Each structure stands twice: as C-alpha cells, then as structure tokens.
Amino acid sequence: MEVNPNNQQSVCISRLVEMSNQMVFLYQGVQGQLFLPPLDFIRLSGAASRNIAMFRDFSRSYFHGPIHPDWPDIDTTIANQRKILADCGRPMELFCVGTSSGAYCAMLFGHYLQADIVYAFGAQTVVEPKILNGTVIDMPPAHQDLALLLSDWNGRTRYKMYYSRDCEPDRVAAERIAHCPGVELIPLRGSNHNPFMEIDYAELLAGLFPAPSPVVVEETA
Amino acid sequence: MNVVQLQEELLDELAAVLGHDVGLDDELLVEGGLDSFGIMQMVTYLEERYSIRIPDENLATSSFTSARIISDWVLPLGRAQ
Image: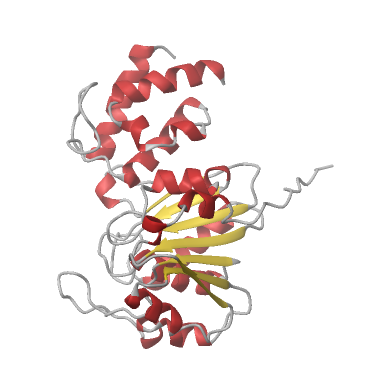
C-alpha cells in the first residue's frame, strides 16, 4: 500500500506479514487513538504478528467525505479496502477493530467487507451527517443509524460490542443494535467511555483474536 | 549499514513524514508532531528499508522519541537479522 510522503495526507498504512492469513483493519477514533496508543494496542492484542492496515479520517466525516484524492467518497473507500485484501493474494480472515467513532467505522466497513469479526469498543451506533466544521455530508440513512444497516445481515460478520456497563450513552448505543443478527454485547466493568480505563485491558486484548489457522503454501510444479 | 548512514536516512524519512526537518536528538512525539500514524509509517519504513522485523518490545511509543533512540535499536537489529 502506498503511503503519501506527507504524513498529514495519509489515509492508510499497512504492515504485512508473509506467513499470516489474518488481516486486522484498525480504525482510529476522532482522537487518533484506539483508547490506547495504537502501538500498545497492536502489541498487546497480538495484531503485530498479523497483517495490519490502519486507517484515519482527517475529514472526520466517518470516511464519507473526500479525505484524499484517492479516497474521494465512501464507495471508493470501501473499494480501496477491498483492494488491500485482494492484494494479499490469498484468502484472509478479516477483523475490523475500532474505538468510539472508529468503532462505528469498524462496524460499517465490517458489514460491507464481510469481515469475520468486528471488535467495537465504546461504539457510536448513530451519527450525525456532519463533520466537525458543520458541513453536512452525503450519508444514507442506514449509515446514520447502524441499526438499519445491520438489520440486513451480510450473513457472515459477528459484531462484538465492548462497552462500560455504567457508561449510559455507550450502553444505550450498544443495546439499540442488540437485536441485529450477529451482534453480541459484552458489557465491561466501569463507567468510562474508554472501557480500558477500569479493566485489565492487557488480559482482554491478549485473547482478543482467534488463533490463526495454518497458512497453506501452494507448491508450483 | 553504518550508524552515520542510518541516522542520515532516518532524518530524511522523518522529514518526509513530519513535513519538517528534525535533528538527531530532537524530541519527536510532542515537539516534533510524530503521531501514532507517523510512528506506524516509520515502522513499515524501517522494516522495508532495512529488511528487519521489529520485535514487539520496540513496538512502543518510547522507541520513537528521537532519531538517535530509533537508530540505537535499529542498528543492532540490522546487523543481527
């Protein structure tokens, strides 16, 4: 994956591991974190031994607005992510991970990309079609309300919703999509929007991803 | 790879990532503006440029606080791998 040499313009950066058939897509929240410094999350979760692509959204439009000349709209953003998977050249188990607004993105794109598992921490499930400067962006109703989108299950993806059980906004956000197929609510101890604040997050992250299955290397005659 | 060449290349890459020049001992994270995305860019750059695999213990923000600190742990990796 090419990276724009100007850091301020980069949308995606990927780190590929030759002998892994698992891909982790990481979507940063508005704060540019994963409720932890991303490297800590990557190291503690074992993502470092898997393929990784990390995404950020400068426009803060949930990737709907033009965020880069090569990422002009939501459809292209989805297509670009599919290309990252296709460029791996072999089937990948896909895990989409995000926190807060990034968790919304993980669910949105996990649905379209037919991810195996989405890990959403403190997720927003309803968003306003406005970016931070107040500009209204083109966002279909099913993207504004994930209950609408996820009601039409893609037949594959499981959504693991982690949230602090005493954080009212996050609990409500999670419970409103609890009826959607594939959704599993995982309330954690605590009241903070960042559920890692009050739990042993190292233990949680260490067991987050399923063990990889062996990579089959095809021999050529 | 020698330390002088490594440090020169590191400074060039950091300038490209950050959009401004930095010195060998300049603090990168707060004053330099090297954010988590920039750190990931440096991780992939280092692995590809020097054909190394960065071990988990160096996948930490504290490993990227200055160009000199980066070179201090990259150099032995480059020699060992």
